Image (cartoon, rainbow, N blue to C red; front, side, top):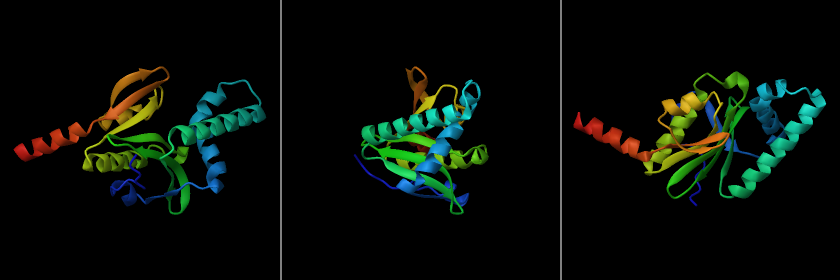
Length: 181
């Protein structure tokens, strides 16, 4: 495995985005962030708020443990703007792909181009070393449109998720088109 720290492009930093390694003190924030990604789903469940909170806490801990076990060489980043935590970006760099394990932003940060800029920087970094970018995306995730617009293609149906890949060959083809014109 090839370990790299943060996406190297300048799009996200131009929006004020910075990254730092996750620490134990980020767990409460990361759980709240996780909850925000499940809020719509939780609205439909006829549980008390305490039951919802307990369920989300259990699910967050299970996801976190799963990621730590299955992606041992990953980079666990907290996304910040002006020193405030606004999201997470978990990446693992493999020999042929950069894997986006997870990217999430707090609700007030969504739809502002931040996720787009981060993903473009991830793509640029991968393209620079001739690697693809992969990500698992829930089929009903509103960000699915973003990934498709960035050139990701569904390569495998994984039930609730689609495995999507941005191919480095696209960048090579685009470069060749630019040279030819």
